[in-house]
Image (cartoon, rainbow, N blue to C red; front, side):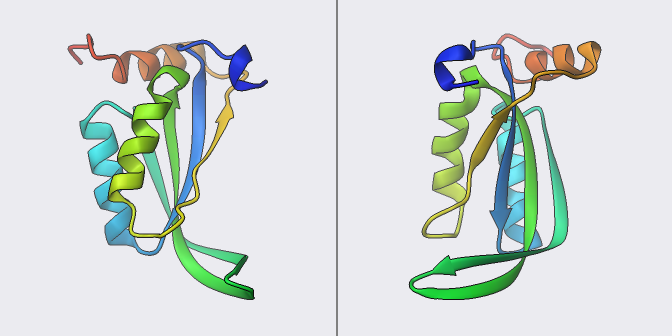
Length: 117
């Protein structure tokens, strides 16, 4: 599914790695607090291996699993890039094709500016 095939209500699962638990917590709190994400799971102890500036390196990071909608993604991305300590933060969004309908409805409502919940 390409971005052209999504609608503003399409649920996205976004991945973002953070250098430590404190930065992950701050990002999670801000994204949920500002209704850019409905929920953020923090998974500490993830080991990432990648090429950076010509060298292969491994680091222990905290992985964020961020739930949002396609309609909120650009605002989420802009805010995350403001908050993230990395020079080049990882942010990957994957459309959710299936899920528990009631949860997906709650998720959409949670990132809606009109929500009272």
